[in-house]
Length: 125
Image (cartoon, rainbow, N blue to C red; front, side, top):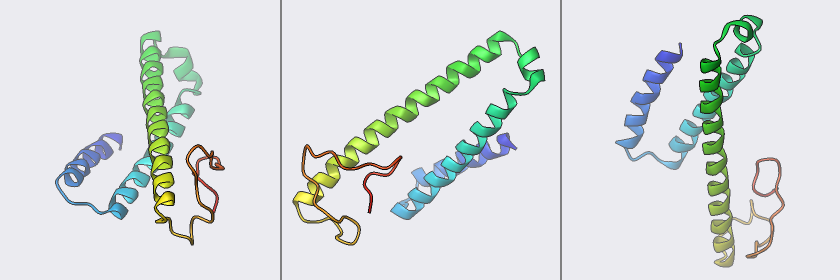
């Protein structure tokens, strides 16, 4: 199943690189990827709790799993930091220009002001 998904993902990646995808396409593709990542991580975590895996997996394989997992985490954290910082700067800029949608953004954002954050959201509505 994972091999088929990987092949499909590579085909879709080519499609998105060679087309002029709109914002909704990009959001949907990203959310589908997130769902697969979440499912894969959950299954992998359960797999690593299996007594036969714990008992018989060689240390080298476990080291590879740990190293790769930590690299994924580091990349994800870097993406999160970069994306939220850039988006905050964009919101401040749009706020100064009076271009924020008043139905979504209830008050202006000022530079240096720390917007209230939810767990993963940028600002509460």
